[in-house]
Length: 461
Image 1 (tube, helix red, strand yellow):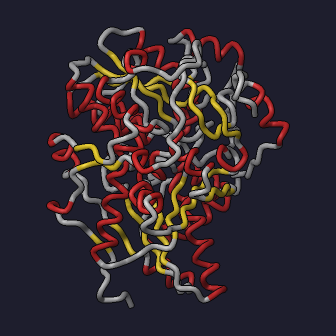
Image 2 (tube, one colour):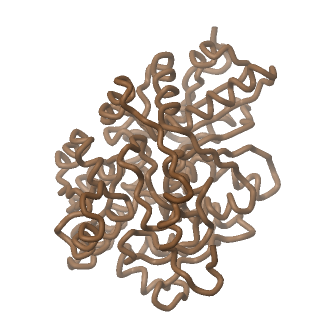
Image 3 (tube, helix red, strand yellow):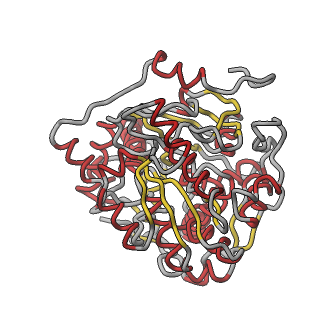
């Protein structure tokens, strides 16, 4: 039976919700390397970045000194529609595994977008509206970000144009239709609607697309239309900043019951969910106050942290964006069409890349059939159908809990459940039908992506 002192779900009161985002860069001794202008190889300036991003978002992107940044009242008001989100004790999973470990998950799927992405989408839409813009453009992979942004833009009356990775556009029509319900225009990427899209199609005929492709198209579309800016759902420091609402709430909920986690686990694609979850805890480690084990979990078919190179690379396939120093597989890397679990970006947040490089967290890659096995096991005992992305974290949380079963250690595990998987049933169907295959790229498969990494002094692989 559950421990009476700790409920199944720990909620914060409305009055306990965070009023500021936490900027982990302020506590990092080694700051993330700056974005570079690919033409000059000099750090991007405010003026250069503001032609692509909203002004206030550029200020947040360049701010690595202020530890806390106020959340505007209108964003706080929107957050209250679906936040605070619950921190759930996975009692049923613990019992099923017969583990002495205590398992908690922060559930971010209790909004119509079905994921954590809305935390940053509403902030970016707010700043676009404040600037007086007509609309925004963006990319989306599995569709969570596009769904969230279309909701946020609808709320503020902004036009929303989404370039959706072609394979997801075809496999996830329902998520596409949710975007259209909220008024977004959704285009499969790469497309014939942009110059960079046409070029990519010419160079890679029949390609299933990638986030790098979609980013290139969205940036071009924004710059071609007056009164538009580009917004991004992950990777950038501004996005990780907004997502710290997850970690701040998690920490406050744990502190309420004097719970101290031993390890914190998150899935890792571009880094928004993982960075948002771990940042407040990472800050304690950086300040020498606490010690936690952080584990980033990524797909074996798109292993940027575990097999990538820590160098400056383009953020997009079309090479129209700034250079970011990150763990990368090369901007030309396109995941196998067999890849069904999301987390398909070729690189990783510069913040998380720096922390990983400095040894503050671990990274593991997992194969997709084992991910869906974990997802199914979790759904059957905890009653939530998890998103494939989230299920990467579930896989490793289960693995760690089983280790505790072997050793008898009563460790406390916290992981991020980024959202629900109800629009991902094609992937679940392939798994259930035995049609899902694991794919691990060979070194030869990865070589073309690495060969495309820009070469300049100091950027050797």
